[in-house]
Structures are given as structure tokens and as C-alpha cells.
Length: 253
Ligand SMILES: Nc1ncnc2c1ncn2[C@@H]1O[C@H](COP(=O)(O)OP(=O)(O)O)[C@@H](O)[C@H]1O
Ligand SMILES: [Mg+2]
Ligand SMILES: [Zn+2]
Image (cartoon, rainbow, N blue to C red):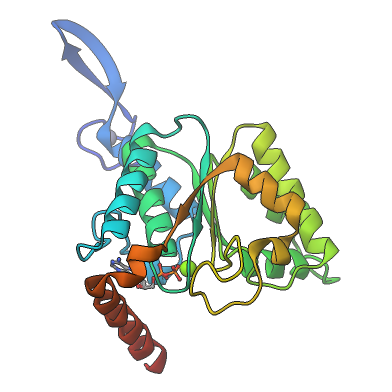
């Protein structure tokens, strides 16, 4: 609430006339402060604050054009059939970029409560609650992941899975599944070995087990950042070389 607002003088309500009838509506200052609150709560990493669906470049690559199209459909029809997305592909192709772009769109356009969580960070945050002098409980860390309307779980499988990790994940995903929560998962691990050039020997099922993997497929539609023509497309190759050198430069900074 903005107590300085000249429109509502801090009450968040203004009187207006709609179709010739007097009506009391929320002031724009309130609407904006709601969006700011949602954006802060979404925990988007600083590195990705500038990412939108609009500034995702396709470079004319038919696969990236198709992917962008599906992402646009996803946000425009959101919550749609309540299915999430499983973004699968090698490192650096823009999976996190697009996930953050989706969050930005849904907050701006539909006031959706969103939460971004890196998988490894989640495990660290939960582990740190086991310290004797931790102020937080495991429950308090997990709670926002259960209740956000949209959860982005980034880099699933990036950390070696233990039974403990699988239990936590299954709990979060089952809870969301049963309550129609919408979840976006990104992973560098392929569904079948040798399908994409991730350079990783293991598949997603190797990392998270077949039970979790099949739960994910029930909850999400898969978007694959690879394909035959993708590798054949010279322009795409050139474009991704550009991204790789950008990344390299960044890591050398
Ligand atoms: N098609 C693209 N258009 C614009 N920027 C891109 C594109 N693909 C990747 N990037 C940028 O390259 C970097 C790496 O992308 P990222 O989303 O982190 O990849 P991934 O999550 O697939 O590993 C980010 O800074 C991202 O904004
Ligand atoms: Mg990523
Ligand atoms: Zn106001």
C-alpha cells in the first residue's frame, strides 16, 4: 500500500464510473504493489532478472521457434489443463531463461504466485535446517514449494540422489499433484541415454528413479531442446556457439 498515492490517498480503493454506474475499484497502486510482492516472493536469481519469453532469441532455428510457441501457449492458457512442463536438454540452451520468462509473464499478466528454486539450493536449505542452532524448520523451507501456484524446480537431478532426497522430492511433487499445483522442471539429463548431446552418461531415471520420473511425466508435458534437425541446423549451431562463448566469457569474468 502506498500512503502517498494521490489517487487513493493510501486507501487502495477509488470511486469510478463504469457503464454509467458508480463503482468502487482497487487503485492501480495496490495492483502494482501486489505484483512487486509476487515478484519478490518468486526468488528469481539475479543473473536471470532480465529474462523474458520476448527476449528469447530463436535465431531462425525451427526447434526453438516451436518451443517458444509452446511456451507462449502455456502462459496464455495458464492454468489450462493444470499440466506443467518438463524442459529437457543440454546445458546452456535457455531452459532456465524460459522458465524465468514464464514466471515474469504470469506475475505481470495473471497475478500468479510463483516460486523459483534451484534443486541443489533446495537440498542445501533443507540440510541447513538440521544444524542444531538453525532458526528454520524443514517444514518452513518446504512449505512455499507446496503452496506456490507455479513452482519452477531448476536443474533436477543435478545433485546425486539419496533415498532422503527422493523422499523429499516425492513428497513435494505428490502434494502438488494431488492439489493441482503446476510445476515446471528443468533438467540436463535426457530421458534415454544418447538422445541428446548433454555429454552426460546417466538418464533422468538413473538420477531420480523410475517412480519419480513417471510421476513427472503425469504432471508435465515434455519439451525437448534437441532433435535431428536441431543438430543439422547450421544457424542454430552458430547461434549456440555464440551462447557458449558468452557463457565462457562470463565464467572468466
Ligand atoms: N535462445 C536464447 N536467446 C537469448 N538468450 C539465451 C538463449 N539461450 C540461452 N540464452 C542465455 O544464455 C545463458 C544460458 O542459458 P540458460 O537458460 O541458463 O541455459 P540452461 O538453463 O538450459 O542451462 C543465459 O544467460 C540465457 O539468458
Ligand atoms: Mg539452467
Ligand atoms: Zn492508490
